[in-house]
Length: 430
Image 1 (cartoon, rainbow, N blue to C red):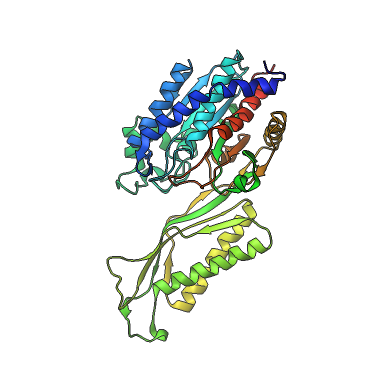
Image 2: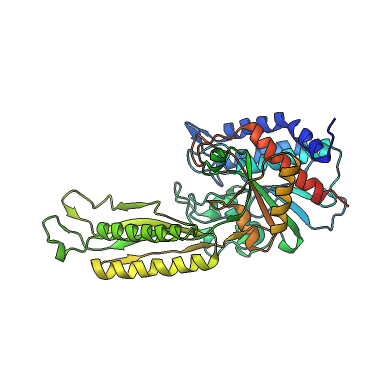
């Protein structure tokens, strides 16, 4: 028998280890795509994963609902139906040929935590909802936080017309096929009213081996970076013969190289001042239909993701990018066409939730660690909407978005114990 409330929560969570393992096995089968996992958003892989989560929720006796964007909500009803609800969860989609735990761990953690509450015989004061979010991975539609922003009525204008990279069909078409209502999303009808949410909590694997390096199983998140993105940028120069002297060239590839090197120096400058940021050129290539060994490239394609933890820093980086573009254009005689711009706000962690999660880790005898997220998460969309937000990270040796994601079940259950203890203290008291 557990000697303290915290120990009792940990015992209850550990007793649900079989549930966790079986859910992870089922979710892997839902998206199995050797050598990794592909649970494509608004496609068969994600559909199967939502069905798996729904079946588990129904076995637990939870109330299941879906919204206009086909997000899935699995709720343990509270004693006071009018009290602001607590939402925990994450996304079930993956990148192509990714791993099994990115996103999915947060949904499984929510279901395991609720199962532990039921095992303890606790009836929450407010509704506790596990949310399985749609389409978080922006690589598919090149739109951030599709499911969470749709639920909150904040999906940007034009997002539903974005085309999935593999099918060429619109987000609206895919959403409708999976039971959603794109017209309601376009009208920004809210399924989740921010003022009626007490908190949003998300558990996620870490995405760099920081906890492995520190020898700790979990961490409490200190913040989620905001970003600005250009998914479809290009540089227009002039196709020329390889023998053209340098002074006459309008070389789009060299302009791209200049842009990349200056941007990297900007990152280096920020790093030297201990100002965290990141810049990623995920696509960076000449035009395959035109390029050749003896041609000076007249067209160059790239994508850009710039992120930081402070809105002022992010705004400064936005201006720096504009300045780099102008300088390279003038020096190389080319034109940049940056195209559609996407933004996501910095995700500020609620100080009270952060402190409570740290205290919970200590109460469970776990060494508390704190870690800034290097990546974007649905929790940031909730923070932007004014919902108090907190996150937990679980140790993972091999990064994410690859088949070798390496979360250990014991680490996962320890982090889930911290989540469940927070629910006991904040949703079940009174």
